Amino acid sequence: MASHDSVLDHLGRRIAGGELTPGTVLTLAGLEGEYGVSRTVIREAVRVLEAKGMVASKRRIGVTVSAMRQWNVLDPGLIRWRLRSAARAQQIVALTELRLAVEPAAARLTALRATEDQRAEIGRLSAELKRLGDDGRGDSPEYLAADIAFHDCLLDSCGNLMLTAIRGPIAEVLTGRQDAGLTPAHPVHEALHNHVEAAAAIVRGDADAAERHVRGYVEAILAEVRAYP
Image (tube, rainbow, N blue to C red; front, side, top):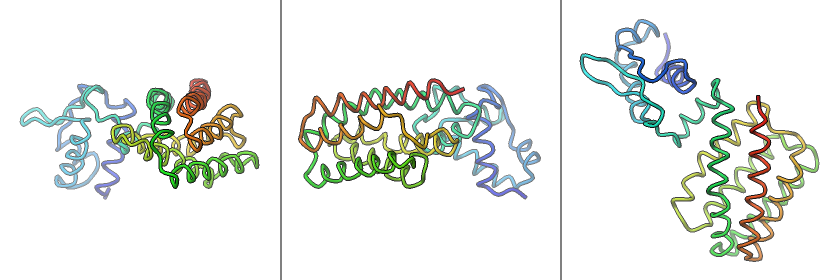
């Protein structure tokens, strides 16, 4: 018998990946029979999907898959499902476009507002990324951890909680790229170089340079991910 988590994960991936298209109507009884679980397990899974805006339940109608514009598209769980589905390439591009809109502005604010400790940590993490990248370990768990920490610190230090809120989606797309084998062992030179230069600009409080170099590395990554099949 399937568990609540496995039912939720399977249903979520089917909806996120487009197998169950918007407007598709499901019934609790039908799902109960399909997954071989109790009605309680199905109701719990549907409740989670409703909270993410992916389905809507109505008495005497059933559970209807919602249009994508109603989804909570920044929800980390939903992002993970899309990254594990046929929509992976589309999801990676969309999140990278979001990064291009947000990260340069956050970097400018971080250069102006970060504490000395935060500046030092961003500098340390950029040096770690360069060391691992130069060693051909850009696809290693250590590189991923340093990359996530770098972006977390940059966004945490900007002093704007609305910008900081995209930490989770960025971590998911970085993880998803690596899990899919799309992160190169030798990072794209332009991207890694601009990470290092952005950190240096933040350390010295140069807002213009921080914004420019962050834009540079996100644009390099965007060109890379747009080439994915």
